[in-house]
Image: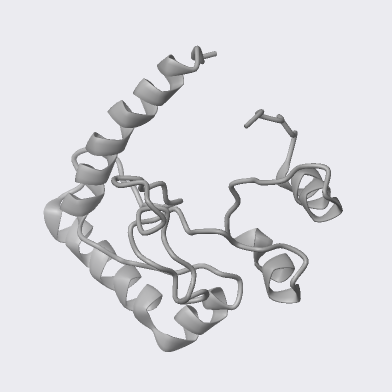
Length: 144
């Protein structure tokens, strides 16, 4: 494959729909094109299938073991915030994200929330930063 750099995903999506590019990695914003049949989803890049496309295999299922690239968001606080406050924030945000109305609203756009613990978030960061750094070094990317 040849990497085609775009300044944003809107132009990349338009070129995918028009047949100017044959494949791209994209997040939930591509869902309208998938649902309309203008784009064919090949696989999802996370560890598990998505609820919005339950028949779509993961890249792992499609034959590439260990492939796990998922967009994630985390809530952070300054170092030194007392643990009871961290726990309360985690509990309150988790309850909001698990609420059926929240789930339904974001599911329509292809987002799925998987609230976790502060420790799980810390572990994800510890795991992914070295992995991302390795990938960037392998393609010659330098920090700017």
